[in-house]
Amino acid sequence: MISALLAVTGLICFLLGYCYYSKMIAKKIYNLGNDIVTPAYELRDDIDYLPTKRHIHFGHHYISIAGAAPIIGPCVAAFWG
Image 1 (spheres, rainbow, N blue to C red):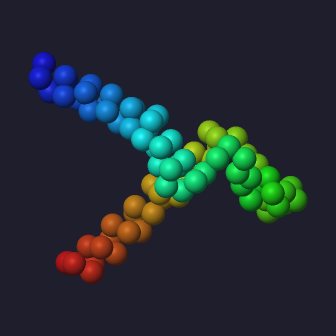
Image 2 (image 1 turned 90 degrees about the vertical axis):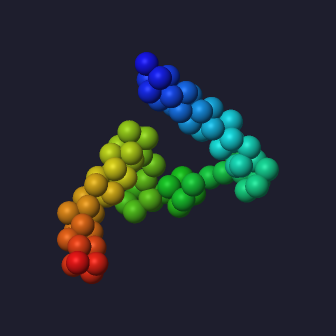
């Protein structure tokens, strides 16, 4: 029971940090506002620069990270033995 309570508390802390702390960092440290235009919109030519949906972008990002593991793992093992 205690471990479940700790897990839920940790998830709530991560959620609160994501919702509030990240906005504070964006506004006060990096001076980011809502008027930022990404290169996909600023340089849009429908060939190289094309806005995409979030779930598609997340899939590409996840696959690029997960796809490197079979390559990086053996390299690290070879380097450190």
